[in-house]
Length: 219
Image (cartoon, rainbow, N blue to C red; front, side, top):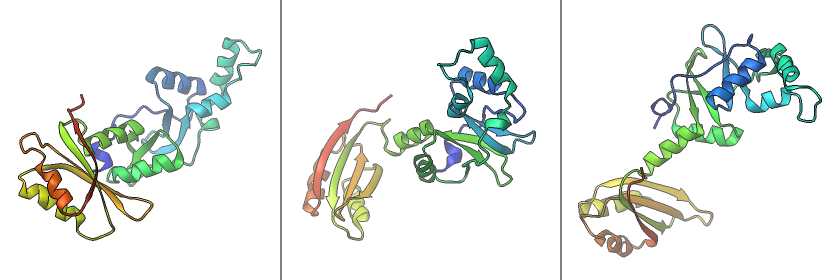
């Protein structure tokens, strides 16, 4: 799954010469945590966050009136506060790569740029969550079977064949390495027309089933 399938192509932006007050009101009005800063060609020049605006604003302990505080923000330009080092991704990057960057840099969203650094979209944590829901088929009725296996080649192929032999179409299959060197594999499939015979087939193949759960599709 690629960024271009989940990103938002229409992005709210600001320019360097706009005031911090304008940036703040835009973020509040659109309920955003960050705004890419672009030039007239939509090339990314920086980024400004709600945290940046908070640092630039007078503290609650200040004796300034609301009017005076807004006046000061109106005098400050976006270029004075914005971060010029911007973490970006491209439309053909993978979803898992974006998830890694969001996690590593502890940000809520990343601008998506082309080869000329022109803004073509934005992808957020919410978009990654949506991708995860689709990958794990949480929007479809299914039975989730989880099992442990040792570190060996061909596990996914073997289990897939068990489902195939039972006439069951797999919705999703994922695995992760555990600290003890073993792996956990999770298979989701609709077993409503096939019963639970595949569970016994997995056990007979030598795998330790750790959980079986049935879900109705989540709206």
